[in-house]
Length: 144
Image (cartoon, rainbow, N blue to C red; front, top):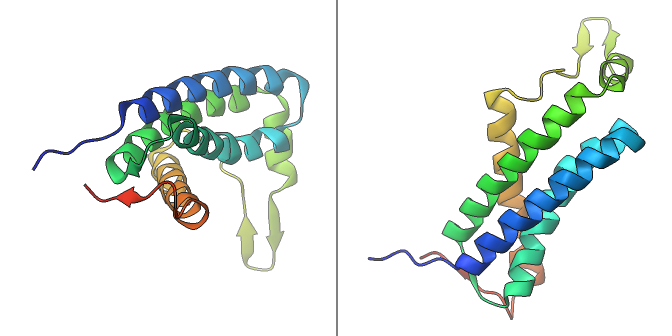
């Protein structure tokens, strides 16, 4: 069985991820890190949804998988930008909390394998769910 996927979805997603990476790198200089951290989640999902809407084709799981891999490229670029921001250490230290035997700390290295795996799963699953919920009629999910 041949796996067919929509190339226009994937190309458009790749281009949007690069554009959003550039935008987020510029924003890193001018805005706070809270916006950057939110941008790690919102822009990749937005690029996936927009690429499927503008291509006007159905999508399949292979396309979503490849688009999520491009989102990881975006995550890598933006994470490097965030970690190079001098305010990042201050903000991560501010959100570190300790009460009794309970300790919460923000990992200052955003480029670890568990972070990549978690981000990939978030991007893939949320894109799939958003498309499944909001685009029932026009964009059907194909497992093949």
